[in-house]
Amino acid sequence: MSPSGTAAHPSSWWRNAVIYQIYPRSFADGNGDGTGDLAGVRARLAYLKDLGVDAIWFTPWYLSPLDDGGYDVADYRVIDPAFGTIEEAETLIAEAAALGLRTILDIVPNHISDQHDWFKAALKAGSGSPERERFWFHPGKGDDGSQIPTRWVSSFQGSTWTRTTNPDGTPGEWYLHLFTPEQPDVNWNHPDVRREHEDILRFWFDRGVAGIRIDSAALLIKDPELPEVPADPPRGGHPFMDRDELHEVYRSWRAIADSYEEPRVLVGEIWLPDIPRFADYLRPDEMHTAFNFDFMVRPWNAKELRESIETTLYAHALVGAPATWVLSNHDITRPVTRYGREDTSFAFDAKRFGTPTDGQLGTRRARAAALLTAALPGCLYLYQGDELGLPENEDLPLGVIQDPMHFRSGGVDPGRDGCRVPLPWTSDPAHAHGFSAPRPEGTTAEPWLPLPSWWGNHAVDVQAVDPASMLSLYRAVIATRRGEPGLCDGPFAWLDIPGAASSVLAFTRGDIGCVVNFGAEPVSLPQHSAVLLASGDLPDGRLPTDTAVWLRL
Ligand code: NOJ
Image 1 (cartoon, rainbow, N blue to C red):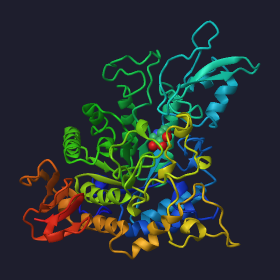
Image 2 (tube, rainbow, N blue to C red; image 1 turned 90 degrees about the vertical axis):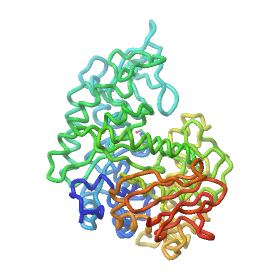
Image 3 (cartoon, rainbow, N blue to C red; image 1 turned 180 degrees about the vertical axis):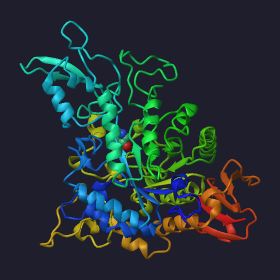
Image 4 (tube, rainbow, N blue to C red; image 1 turned 45 degrees about the vertical axis):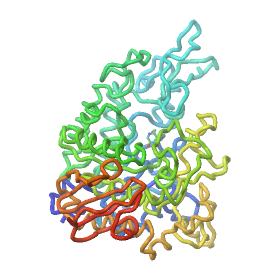
């Protein structure tokens, strides 16, 4: 049996795996300094094993000034000392593998930290130097070069250009950064950039890493002419997004991944509304899978989600790749909060402080969403803390917020720290609810982001012994999925629920049926021989609002 529980060839594990995302800063703190670390993860591997996941995806753990939570890498071959050492990372990968858990790392190829040796050397070497050719340095427009080279807008709002200062103190060239000024974009037309990333892949693959998640995967290549973004860019011809030349980069990465005895896996972070263009990245000689953001951002609504499921399955069938189902990650408002609001969709530019939220409603829907996503064909991603039903922490004091999205919005956008708060492991509030292991003298530092006092109710130790908890539900969902061949690789077909088509999603996977009721009224269940799992009670054997059920048909 493969770690995914099916008898399929082990090298296909990624086709229907359950992958747990760890945000290392906030998962578990093994040395009591208030920041999560690799020692903390190692101490909690048994928890992940019990949860039943197949693999762990770590957001960046490399040396970084943490200007963007680690997505500003200063050295890929060094673990940030706040998290541990390279030896510890190797031990962790091996210990996880011994438990049947594969490791996926984040690679951030679009940009590096301004503290990376390459960028420091480029700044020092000055304009026209070979060191600067690895980046996008450019003179400004206007007689004195004081105007930005393009009016491209950063993914984090504001300009994408920052001006340098010459050694004599005069203003110098500008450099490009699609995110913050501390994250200069590298030039993918430069052979050093390609070679270096290929080496980085081998460096980690050689250490037993099973795959990589590719950050901002559709942004790497820029039009060297640096034109403005046209009103209606031709497909493949946007100045910095989804350019045709990208595919050749991923083909070369796929060749490296395939050169290993157990081929390594490439997972793309690709935000593209153009579905056939999205699918192009998943052709058999490119990436294996990509995150399904279309599903994640849709509102809690049968029609919307059905449309997204159909589009997703259609797009993936074009290229024979498995879909992924994702409810959240370290960038997105937690499902329990999102689904408890009037507008249950997600959009970065719509995030605001003080949006009214019904936590009970959101939790009920998030439980149903767990059954829905886990029953769909493909891979399931689970962001740490969603298995505990943690809400977004919207009460962070302004003084502790670190996310650049908050600052670059002028404080209007709450930022993403609310979904990055450390996990509560114990109901006992000591040591940040068990997030931090006490130091030898028995104390622990304050956690890097504070946990709300009432999060004790969500703690792992409470939920582990409560059969009605979100944690127990997730454990049952993953175990049932693993044990049912229909849910692993059974065929998908929509199921008609007469009279409720607009408010119910129902489908079969082999002999298993999944029914989700989005409507206000309870609905009758299709004929079945057993209820395998339900996200809530089924009074009179009917499926109430915002509830999902798995049936043996
Ligand atoms: C996507 C990552 O998920 C996000 O956290 C990061 O800020 C940006 N890419 C830039 O690397």
